[in-house]
Amino acid sequence: SLVFANDDARAMMNLAGSELCHLPGLNSDGVFLPSGRLYMDLGSHPEFCTPECLNPWDVVRYALAGDRIMADLAAGASASPQLTDVRVRKGNVDYASRATWGCHESYSHRSGLSAMSGHLIPHLVSRICFTGAGGFNALAPGLEFMLSPRVAHLSSVISGDSTHARGIYHTKNEPLAGDGSYRLHLLCGESLCSHVACWLKVGTTALVVSLIEAGRCPGNGVQLGAPLTAMGMFARDPQCKVQARLLGGGLASAVAIQRHYLELAEANLDADFMPPWADEVCRQWRGVLDLLAGAPESAATTLDWAIKLAMYRNRLGRHQGIEWKDLPHWSIVLAALQDALQNTPHAGKQVGVDFVLASGSPLAPTVTALTGQLRRQGLKWEQFRAFLELRLELFEIDTRFGQLGGGGIFDSLDAAGVLTHRLDGVDDIDHAMTHPPARGRAHLRGNCIRQFAGDNGMISEDDRMETYRQKLDRVLAIMDKWPQIDRQKMIPTEEFA
Image (cartoon, rainbow, N blue to C red; front, top):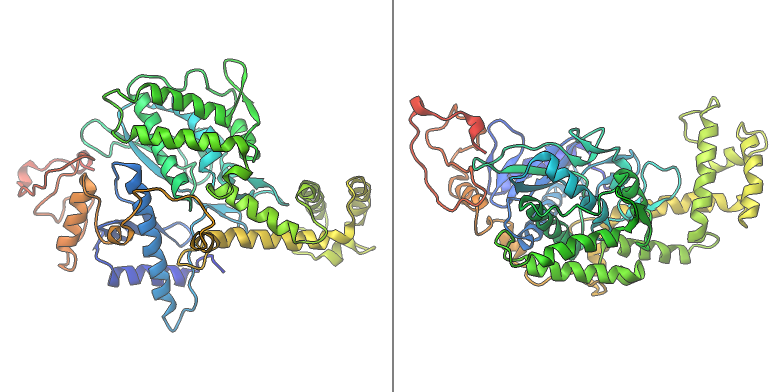
């Protein structure tokens, strides 16, 4: 199984504490590394957080460094006599429990909440055409492919909740810097294997945030009448052609909305507020949108969701009796049977195909009612078992796709040279595993961790035990000063990040 057991996760965390260069948190679980932070998330899931990065290359670099750290910890834990074959994967849904975990993103900004949400939401809704992880709807009874399986778990447009009523836009707008900047916290995204998809996810979103900060109102003209509905439509359309209704009238596809944002970014490339890497982001952005004109086949070696879709269809091509076009029909049948089962003494229990199709089964009336529907689609009950077996097989393939440590499907395809997802400049991954980014407060913090690791130091979120403090109130901090604290003049902790 690729799902963590409590012992597996704890063994990895213990190994991190004994083997990695780190400082523990005084009042928080996990360890702070030069390359990020590792801690235990809900459900006994080890979670890696990258450091603050100043460009999309570093984001991908440190995300990949985190992957390697996690894979190494799993390999180390597997060597324990009490544990065997501990595996880790990156993914955002669990088909067994129907649970979801987000790949959270944070962006520094100085805009008001209302301005940010209104202009950013159309981008978040439509960017899934290239940022979707691909997979199946874990909440559906059958097999429903989605560009972004995370979308099925979003239930509102704007929300402050990150575990239940999740929204496209999260209102956790914390002041994690002392220079007037705030943290834009996004939880609608997904963990990605494709380098270019991950790079574009953060690069394009950062440019949209910059446009909003500068008052360019990038969402004007593409605000959606029903963003959550539109996101569901886009997530279920591998051709990337379906159109959603706009708030001001008219229709637009996900690609068309993305082109709107791209063109505004290109028109402002020379503006002072744009980052120095904006031109390269726009070039890659335009390239992937042009690529999606032939979706899904055109993106089948580049984007996570398209790679997976091609793989699933290829598997069906070798599975006798079941075709891709049949999946929606069998999914409807399975949903009807599950609904009928709830009205029997067997509600909530696992039942087999033989039980379902037996003449004396409590589901016999439902089976009879569905028989005509199957015949109209050219299907037979004899294929039902094959469909259920295929469903489990595809779930397993999806789960193994993002397995880390060299045994995953994506890594195997990449090693075989059949994928086209890499970007120049995403390199030095091994160095990033033990060193912080070259600039910013992550550089200062990471160097402090390297300096004080092993000296019984701890990273504290308050000041009760400190004699010296490193003030990291600016994300772009470049000075390394450690003034001695006059405890009579201490600044309240909440003023510091």
